[in-house]
Image (cartoon, rainbow, N blue to C red; front, side):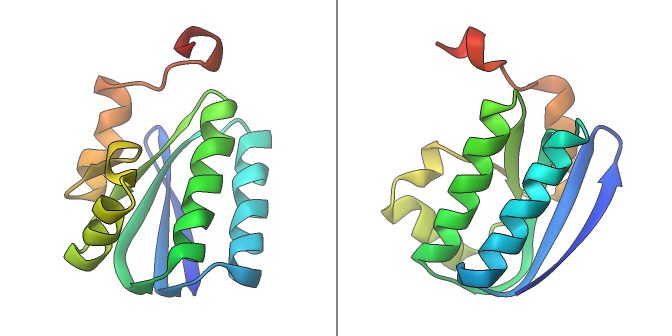
Length: 123
């Protein structure tokens, strides 16, 4: 798995490429997420348009990133979720946990219309 990062308006867009299977790639992404949080960048969109395959470890990697960002007062939103990955999200019932959008633009705009709820207000 490779990834690229770009900033758009009020969000950071991470485009994952290839097979998302956790492991060392998951560690690198986890470190990057924490670096973004330290920089105050807590609104993240993960673009899945270039993902060929995702296993349960890859899904765990996304859950870990989501948890870290929500605990910091931000959120992780998915864009361009292919049918096979959407099926994985539905089977695992994670479709209700992740906010997902048809395009990166929609996901980025969603932070304006549906901002993350700070942790202390969410409980």
